[in-house]
Length: 354
Image (cartoon, rainbow, N blue to C red):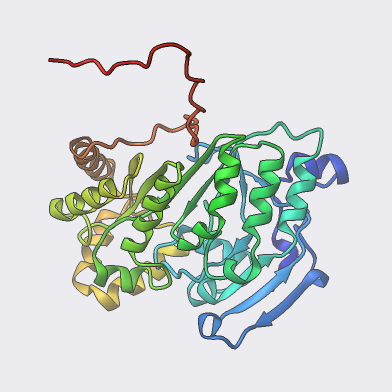
């Protein structure tokens, strides 16, 4: 494996300031890698490559469509094994397979919390928003063993640094107390990804994830503890989860779970993911292969007219059920402000509108 080719994209400001590293320097060297396997049911067939990272704050390329500039990704590869995952291509940088290798060869940055704490303390760091779960899921199965997120959340909380988390994992509820504490000192945003409710589709296209209903339970539980949670309705899969009745059922369930927002995202197929998804499609839905070739003939994204149609339908349904889309770039205070101290004097009387 080409560990030396896993580079900062580019180096975070703290790392650059402290070590004078260049953008193409490796995140870690081959001598820092320990490979492990665990003979337990939940990890059978999975290989973990434990590394000691030199930097964990990654700058998002300027040309990206993402509404944030910095990310932290404690893992590479993901046992959720979503066949459409756009991050599959990143495994090829290590000469690892973007198919089954992405699902079973997991890179773990075991020192991520301590490195993040050091980088946040740098005088060069400006306290920008940090997004997590944007490459692979930070609450995938491995997190149950390595427990990196509690230290990461604590480091961000100590510096009152705003952050967001996107996940399909129910393991986030383990850190509920930490999230409540963080929401008391900074702006945090939590989103859960639920693209559809179809159980048969879920079992084949997202085989390593918790069921959609369990993810909606996460949304409900977070809300009950004062942490508003949005839903990224992603992906909407053409011809498999985009029927109006399916969209309605999904948005209705999202609303019933108490989501603060719903944002649809149509399936996109970048290199690495495209080949793996196409193989899956040919095995499970061969009659759709030609339709996908036509729909995605221009590249990784579905045509604009199709994306607009789905977005319009979901937003109309969201309005009907009392929720709305997330507005890109807007901060959201998760914890409501403390109520003002009750004034002295006569007890207020509830006025009637009639």
